[in-house]
Structure formats: C-alpha cells, structure tokens
Amino acid sequence: MKSSSAPFPAARPRRMRRTPGLRALGAENALSVGDLIWPVFVRDGENISEPVTSMPGVNRLSVDRVAEAAREAADLGIPAICLFPYSGPEKRTADCAEAWNPENLSNRATRAIKAAVPDMMVMADVALDPYSDTGHDGFVRDGVIVNDETVEALVKQALAQAEAGVDIIGPSDMMDGRIGAIRTALERAGHQDIILLSYAAKYASAFYGPFRDAVGASGALKGDKRTYQMDPANSDEALRMIARDLAEGADAVMVKPGMPYLDICRRAKDTFAAPTYAYQVSGEYAMIAAAAQNGWIDGERAMQESLMAFKRAGCDGVLTYFAPAMARLLR
Ligand code: PBG
Image (cartoon, rainbow, N blue to C red; front, side, top):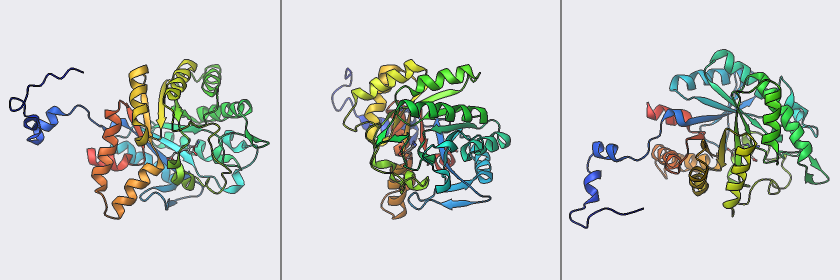
C-alpha cells in the first residue's frame, strides 16, 4: 500500500477523528444486524430456560422457548439461528443413532421455529458429538476416530436436518470428504437449495470449553480432537481446507474460533473471495462476559469491538452468542 499523506503539519490525522460525524464518515467497516448468526442451545422439556453457568447470559431452551426466542430474534432483525442440542446421557450411544432421528431435538426445534417464524433461517450442526457416548465428532473404533464410516452417518444426519426444513447445514466435524458426500446426497434428495456453510478451518481449540459444558459433552469427551481438528500453528493448511471444501460444494466457509484466528479470516477472504464467516466461540464469549460481570471491562464496548474486528478481517458475518445483545445495541 502506498502512503500518500503529507508530512506534519499539513497532515494531521486527528482532524478526521475530531467529531462523531467525521469518525462516521471515515469508518472503513460497519457491523449490521444482518451479519449475525445466533447459536442457541436446545434441551428437552417444556417452558425451560436454564442458565449455562460458564456462559453468563446464555441459556439452554426447551423447544417451545426456542420458537419464542426465534420470534424475538426476528423482531430484532437477526437473520439466522444455529441450533445446538443438549442431549441427556440416554441419547448418547455408540451408534449415535439419535443424530439422524427425525424427532431429535435439533429437528424438532427446526420445525418449531419454521412453524412460528417462517422467515427465520435455521442452521443445524452436522457432527456426532451431541449423540456420541465418547463426545467425539465421529465414531471411535479401537481408539481411532474413523473417517469414512463417520461420513456415512453425517450424510444421514444432514438429510434428516434437510427434511426437517433447515436452510443452512454447518458440518463442524472435520472429517475428510464430508462436504462432497453431503452435497451429493442433498442434490439426489431434491434439496438443491440448502446452503452448506462448512466449518472448513476449525482448530483444535481450548476455547470450546464452555460449549462442551453447554451441550453436556465435557464429561463424556475422552482425549482431545487433535486427530481431526486443525493445529493452531497452521495457516496455509486452512487455505487448503477452504479450497477443498469450496471445490466439494460448500457455498460458504467458516473459520473457528474467531478472535485468535483473524489472520486466517483475512487470508481466506483475500484468497477465495467466498462468503466467509467466523465463529466467535463459547470461550471467547465467556472471557468477555465474565470480565464484564466482574467490572473489569466494559462488556458492551468489548462486544462491539470484538465483532467489528471480524468485519475488519474480511468476514461477511459472524456466529456469536452476543447476537441478541448486539442487535439491540444496533437498533
Ligand atoms: C462440535 C462443535 C463444537 C463447537 C461447535 N460444534 C465443539 C467441539 O468441536 O468440541 C464449539 C462452539 C463453541 O465453543 O462455541 N461439533
């Protein structure tokens, strides 16, 4: 980039920062409510809103309450909700069969949202971890997370989500070949317009801790996810994963976590110019929310600043637990 500015005092960059109006005119990026996808935790029961201890301000909602929340989100202008089921131990089995049960929590919540607020887009997560007795995203055979057998199950899970009426499918499992397999199956089943938002560059991260509490997976998880999620040391590899997923039929790609990986967002956007999203994950949310709760930072400003960072890094949108709070602030 060429620097065209004159030397001081002809150039006084502070001139452009003097008033709110000048700062608004000079702003290079803007965050709008249309950039937000709201991840929501769903649980069994009726009329339940149960706080997630490690995520102050976040609740697990029963299906009826999810539909209500969708209505409130729609009133705020939030375009999409992403569902994460919290399944009890009885739904966590070695065969993960609940994943493709048309009546599982995620599919019931999808139908409830679509019935209550047809325009609200529903995104569902493809991965076996909510239904697995090991907490892993794939089947475990002799201590190994097996790829191809898992992909077959993920395809069944995605088809059940498509039948339930989702608009966006987000494979978060990091198995090889799943985007192509799911895309082919969706085309064959007549679901040609479902968006595949691939968790293309998903890292093996400590920042998922509170999420695993929220979905009840932390107790179950044996070992870690490093044989399928990416090494935080890598950046070129993220570009290869994104290239691959786009080639296999992903409509949009995601980088996850968000804030520690803004460099990946920027490289991804510059390289592929594809619809690019970041997931500001549970640990990122928890850090800001907890510090704010303690009075150590201004929570509202930290939320705003952190979300603007994704726009600056080239993201088209962001999955964030702050979605309703941010939407209210933007109004
Ligand atoms: C699992 C999944 C995870 C998240 C979304 N989908 C956790 C994991 O990979 O263990 C994390 C989201 C968050 O931390 O907010 N398929």
